[in-house]
Length: 279
Image 1: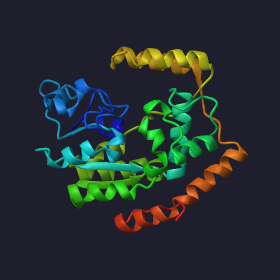
Image 2 (image 1 turned 180 degrees about the vertical axis):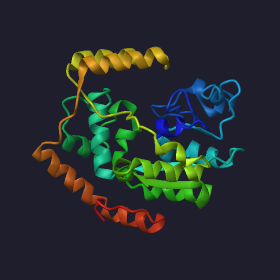
Image 3 (image 1 turned 180 degrees about the horizontal axis):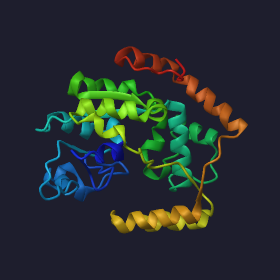
């Protein structure tokens, strides 16, 4: 979604999709030298406006802002009165995706930890996942309505928009046209847009090479060189991720069902179509 909106001629996306500028201190994403506590001017560096351009919409996409007290405090009072879009994935699927991503593509989750064990540790708070709070609090964070209600109160209904990952996958053109209209952009741009895919899920072929990749990429500055190196690595050492095995799928189904009460509250409070979600 970040890419699709940023490609609009009247929009400008941040250099880094996730700037982390408004995350909470003490979280694994916190960068003290690139944080709102050091002043808003540092954020401006993420949005270099080309000469002669005058974008109507400037955007960045840090999903963890949903849970960040700093973002909740600072965003509503920014002088530009920004709008906030939250795209939600069915909680069980989102948690399973987080688990596999942090296990296979980083090292926050041990490579030998099963999904069932991951959930047990997250539920009982018996693993710190190397300080990654998204993993440690995965189960609480799946109850989206508890975090969206304070955002709605702080922003007001007209500055808050909720969509689902299912909508994005099923009909991206209709969703983006609708969102672009909400943002004040001309939706006809998307009539002939190709909708390129970003951040597709993958699994590493060689775990040793992936471990080296994790160490190296954290020190590389984001930009063209980073993107080229990432593209080359993915061609050489990644493959499509397999579907969950039967035992894991059963664990996932039970997990998804456990969020039914929270999903019902979400649907009722925000009038969100949760077709396909346990309710």
